Image 1 (cartoon, rainbow, N blue to C red):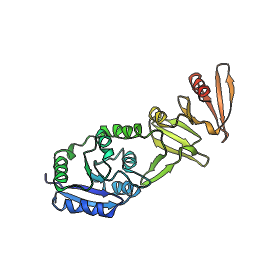
Image 2 (cartoon, rainbow, N blue to C red):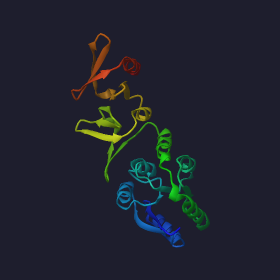
Image 3 (tube, one colour):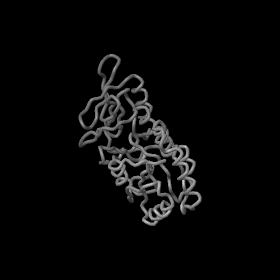
Length: 248
């Protein structure tokens, strides 16, 4: 292969980043174009450098490795997870990571990963990204935070601050007291991963946080509306009303 593989290193420990750099000295075919110590910076670096590969730690403060992958879903390079926690190994492989290395990384094992990259990185398929994020969510329900990316900017929403969620074409709108946040997301997938004790899908286009509900009123002979604390009135379907009554 003539073209070099570009890579960034993401780990909150400087010694761990230094270790990866040291291993890569044996592999001039891989060019390090950046490194950082947290997930926020990782999203920015990928946006700026568009690398072929990320050496990615899993456990990091604020944004972990799986959060980074979710935020990069539409521009995801190949991934090699590097972590001290082998409990993540099965999840990482299920997530279709290119490889998984356990700290401290041994030279022989590292070199095998590089060989896999040389064989596969050029043909990396993006269709596995959805499975990667979904698998991680399935093991960490309900959502404890909602990640919103706008270019290189990342916002973390507390689900408890969301008044209601509205379907909008291929996006969803998370409505809070201050504003709404737009995110590319499947409504059905989101519904599965929200806390079922708090969130209820009252209509095919709306999920509400019952803590912000004030009352339910008839709208017509066979339909109802739910009124929210922010003054919004939302439609409630027949099935949505049944689900709401079960929850209440």
